[in-house]
Image 1 (cartoon, rainbow, N blue to C red):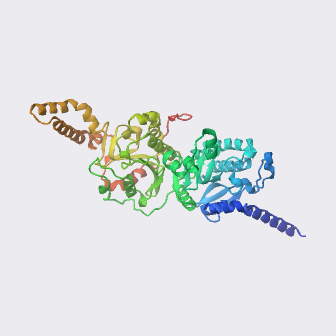
Image 2 (cartoon, rainbow, N blue to C red):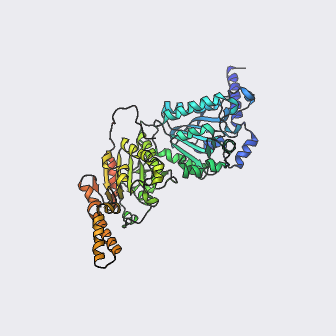
Image 3 (cartoon, rainbow, N blue to C red):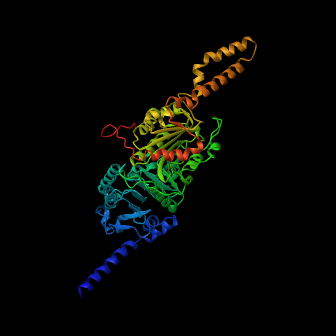
Length: 532
């Protein structure tokens, strides 16, 4: 046999081994996966990455467990596929759990492979995406998985603010492993397919007596609407992959790069008189801020984060003149756009991400301020609400604020007033800026005047309440025209310019162009101490 024939034989053996590993499967488990409407692990990768770009590594890795008969397990790749593929033509580190392989349980080698991809992403400065479908730790291996969990959480934390981290839940992520998606930047959940909880229903019932379903403990509705753990909800697996690809398109590869420029075809000088009709002339009426934002950004496209979580605050990615911006906006259609504890945290987290990855911030403001009352105080609004003050203060990226309606008290400040070193502050002529709204101010400074009007009416034999109400309305109107008029703060340099609403888009694009080279250095420190 010639040397060439020997090599050909070895290559044939290699291909046979690889084919066996790719196709070795528990047919019963695969059938269950299909019945649940799920793809297999390699089908998921093929559906996610650019065709023909996935380079798999560590295919031959074997499980390390020896106790409780674990050495007898036949686990191809130890239940996880790892490698590098291209998303929108850009390299991305990827790991994907294989639920058909012992329910995708996290063994020591499984963990080592996952951690290897985080180390690879850090070393090569590329994003990392995990496709999760895992029943939790492999108990037969005891300390091995526990140690790899620790390493995983460490790498999640070290990679934070260095490379984008995205977690896609296409199945369960249970037990301690759930902390990893929680430490990543964005967590996607597929409806009625993705679940995550620290302990599943049987353990919860055994330890606490509480009976709860998987949906009630950690389904998509709980985490997208109540806990805030989930940032994006997908209708199915294909939708999850499509949305993840779209999100990555807005982001840079790492914290040393700028976000990618995309030619959107939307003219930078486009004006819109439709904006005149989107905000009500009467301040008491509510409206949906999404309509204003969509009219301004490129092609009306918003990629919203935390859409269903405290929707009185909007956070979203969009483009202006082809460049990515992160938008933080009050939404008056929900609770009047008031800043609640959780809404402040939502906005603060988003601003911190944008600042870490060189994404300019646009604040669009219409809020009566922070929510007051005993419920919010018990929720810790003094320190938790202060997170948004902190994030707005510490941002070093270009930051522009646009006041379109109310900007009162702490809401005026926390959304990005001139006092927070915001680069530009613009306002529509509809904006009202001040310490307190007219009702609150008149209640305090006009009490004597209102009482006097009532006394005089009573002396004349007229209705006291009607006279006081009329005087109150008169004082409120006078206060609004004199002190809440946007021209009052503009005259004091709290507003850089009052702009025609229809010119909002070209004004913002031009303003951001002047800020492209912005360099802002904060005082040296190891790190700040954000109020947690």
